[in-house]
Image (cartoon, rainbow, N blue to C red; front, side, top):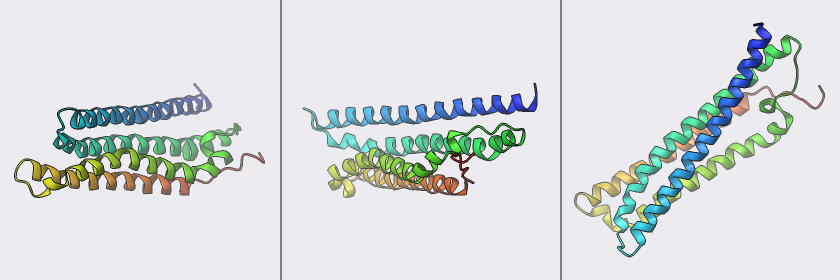
Length: 185
């Protein structure tokens, strides 16, 4: 197998993995939202047990970790394609445009990272804030409600930190790309 064949195979493999991680990240969000819907339905249904919602911040921080991990890997794979595979392919005379380094993506990428982060904040943080707000009187209860409420506050803040940290890293990654002008090549 030639170096060009290896590079093309690596390109295809990395693109396939990137797409798989996008699907996994989105599936995690769907599962999380389903669990949140079920918890709200159970907590606010006929039994009216809003304290059940105190589990949501724990789910939120877990989902934030998983979503940020997959989103970070998507960024790393994209960087690999742009910074390592594409220059090699150009060097051996194969300069077909790549989506990851295209003018079209360049125009959209800053908005894309910001919109994705905003969406993650809404889907992952809003239910936690609502759950804590609906149980606000529990902040000074004895064990287990009081400590669970305060732990929920910590988990909600930690989930926000994870998402914002991932946003900052992805934004810096997009800023380091030496965007290729594919419209003139």
